[in-house]
Structure formats: C-alpha cells, structure tokens
Length: 201
Image (cartoon, rainbow, N blue to C red; front, top):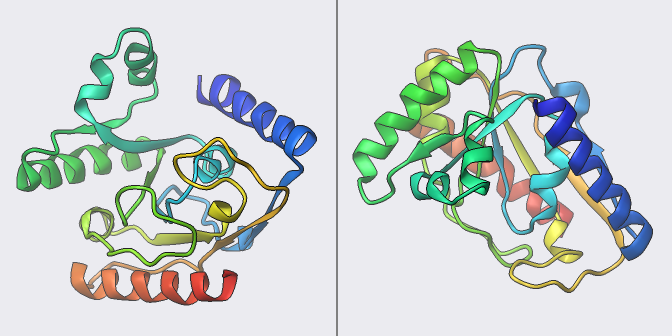
C-alpha cells in the first residue's frame, strides 16, 4: 500500500513541482540511513518535506491528532497507513500512547517520523524541541536521525506561494540512544538541528 500509493503519488507531486515551479530537492546524508527502521526527527516548516521524505524512509508512519481519523474518506484512508493517533488534550497520556504505538510500528519494520518542534515554523526560525520522539527512541533503544532542510525558503508555511530553486535536505549521522537518558539525547538532537539549520540558512 505504502510503496504503490504513497510513494508513487509523492514522486509525481515532486516531479510536477520541478516542472511547474522550478523546485528541486537535493538530499545529503543518505549514507547515514541504517538498514533497520528507527526514529526520524524532521524540521517542519513546509509541506515539501512531508512529501520528499515519503520515498526516503519506506514504509513510514507519523504522529497525528486522533480526530483526523474521523474525517470521512480522508481519515478512513489515512488509517490504512497505521498512523500513531494521539489525544493532544491529555499530554501525559498522549506521550505514553505514542511510545507504546511507536515501539509496535518499529517492531513491524516501519519508520517513525516526527516533527519535534511541533507546528510548522517560518523559514529558518528556531523552535523548541519536544521530547516525544527522543522518549520513543530511548524506550525502543533505536537510533535517531535528525533531518534539517530549507524548504520554507521555496514553499513557505500557510501559503500557496512557491519560489524556484533547490531545497537542501540534510540527514544527520545516527544518534545512539541505548543506555542514555531522554534529556541527554534530546539535547544532542536539538544541537545538531540548530547547527544544521544555521548552516542551511
């Protein structure tokens, strides 16, 4: 389902963006991607990164608001991709549920992709790292990959305006979590993101 529907669809969208808007994507750090699925923490400032990473980490799941699954047709189709649906009104319960569900997805061979800074941010603007993704990775004892990019330069959040150019996506070396604390891993991941974003912008 994921390969034939999601990956094919997103590749068509990216090809269309290249042809109509002059936007292309350049990915650095593919050599760091391990053979086994792990947790991927991605900078969120556009729709573009959600599209281009669908064909990099295959198959993958994301964390979404539970109410999205109740939307007719869209929600029903989304549920087939095994998303991690949480209730954001209960922060503590949501974290526990996310860790439990995330571990099951990883055990099933599915990459778990999260946006640690929460909502989409303006291009290059720093955000506060949340600990959900690192808590999952330390509990599951799997590495973390951090992904920085400058997609907001070419497809800014909350607008249809698009600017031609090359989007640079940078993947970190794996950050090991086994035997480490969540705050320690969060600090390292956030530091790598800050440095990469400063370089990209």
